[in-house]
Image (cartoon, rainbow, N blue to C red; front, side):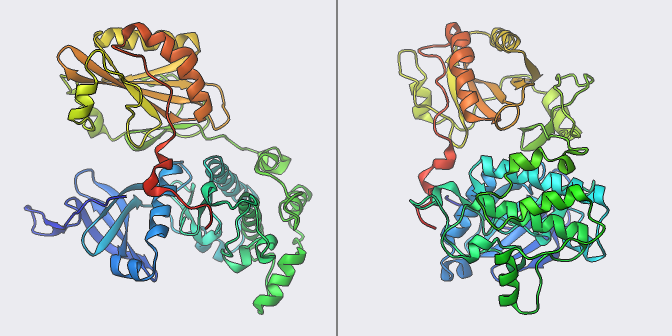
Length: 475
């Protein structure tokens, strides 16, 4: 990735330095060997953020450039309400800045340090943890360092998984189908990692989740000893004892999750079907709009439409909504260059012209905006999708639970010339295969008469496979 060069600028109003031209930096939240994390305020949106500042010289000397790229690559993949969000990455000549979501409630570890949690509270955190981990695994991301210190709580008491510094992606799996790097926190590491013969990272994350659940319910670790080698022996043998206040259902769940044999250890889908886990469990159904998480609601009081969900709603700031209402003309796509514009001329082949960084495509139409939107609404009605309209953006959302949650697609209309419009179609949530099937069977045929030259092709390989972020076959 090419970092954009940015510098701290002076705020003309009060003379204070603004990092990256818009962030007012506050107190130090924490620090490590290579980075410091500060609280900051976005002076333009009044939004609190956390800024992770890395020293370029230390990163270079430590040979960690590939490591940093991998972390950025991973955080771009795992946009989920129960995972700390990365907003942007910028840099100066000496520093790299991760602008991230600021989570107000602190570490779950500090909550557990005061004593064990009530069963319903521990269950809620475990449910949210499993939901986030399941989402990561579906995206080919494995955390490998799950522990209460890396689990944060927001102001509403919801869990947020953080610190993907030791994470890996499926691209790194060796030819034997396993990972081999010895990593993680000793008390939470799975026995097969200690065996040094390779491991399934998904099963390793599940083991760590089991240890986290035990800690939440007991207030202490299941495997503990003053001697780290003695502790490793207990982990390798799976020697732990549940306290008397654990319910029989919880003990059965933990016994299957903390199974030393990864082949017979519970899978995430099996955990989600477990009786203890399912009590009060609510699936998170969401989509991402303007870098914000939006839940699909089950009521109909939203002017943009809705779909069934059990999760609270994430809405855009009122100021942003007001700005959108004042739009009087079609926006222009900022990412188009001269070559793109020439290629959009009638007679040119439009296949292969895809929006960088998104799973989607764009096409040109000479039809009026109203006709394009009406056609999208017709297509949505045929497949029972919900339609959400805002200015020149149309969101199509499935109410059916797919392989990776409900499918959500965004179509945005831009002005290329007074007589030509560009329509960008992108997958916002759900399974890529289901998105491609929808595009090929419904969207492409439905829009064919509105396009110039060609209709939209199905989505290409996601930008996550971009060479600048490609990982080698070994770790």
